[in-house]
Image (cartoon, rainbow, N blue to C red):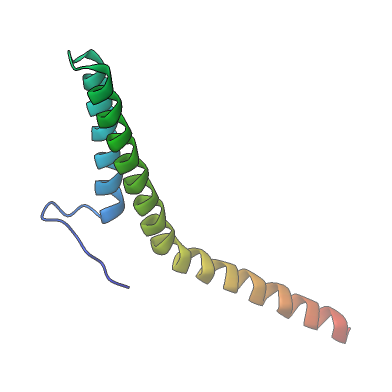
Length: 91
């Protein structure tokens, strides 16, 4: 698995979540800006779309990071369960 890191050592998922938080703050700032209603709506729609994209990328990267760890522990647990069941069936 590729372990891409930024220059600050943060994983991609954290960068995506921080980007989404920045977009929420940008939307809040746009609500107070003196723009026309159409421009404000178009900018908010674009920022929400970008935020959804960033959050979905973060969730996928987080799942890709956690999946091998969870699978390893689940495999060990299932192996123990199978060993117990085999031992019980022999008795």
